[in-house]
Image (cartoon, rainbow, N blue to C red; front, side, top):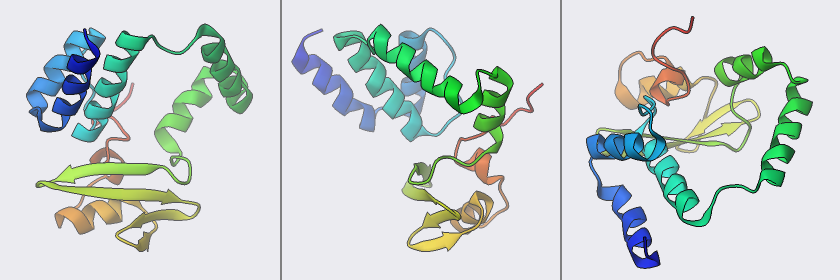
Length: 150
C-alpha cells in the first residue's frame, strides 16, 4: 500500500461507521473486536495499519517491555489480570467516550478522575452525570468487559 493510500485510510477512520470499523478489525486482527468504545477501535486500527506498513516493535523492545512488566508484577500472570480489571489506570491517562454524538474526555488523577474541570471520586459518577442514568463507570468507559469473567 502506498504512503498516500495509507494516510487516506488512517484519515478515513474518523468518518467510518462503527460496523465498518469492526469489520476492519476482523480483517486486520483476525479476531472479534472488543466491546470498547469507538475511539479505542479507531486508535488500535490506526496503530495496526501503521504496524503492518512499517513493522511493529523491534524484538529487543518487546523483550524490554516484558521485563518491565515482570518487574511490576513479579512475573505473576494472575496479578496482571487483577491489575487490568481492578486497579485504576495510571494517573494522567485520558479516557475517551462518545455519548450521543459528544466526545467526553476524563483524565485519571492521583486521587480520582477529572471531567470538565471538576474532580470526581468514581467513573460511575461521571457516567451518571453524562447519561443521567446509573452505569458501571468501568463498563461505560470500556475498561471492563460487560460479561462476567470466569
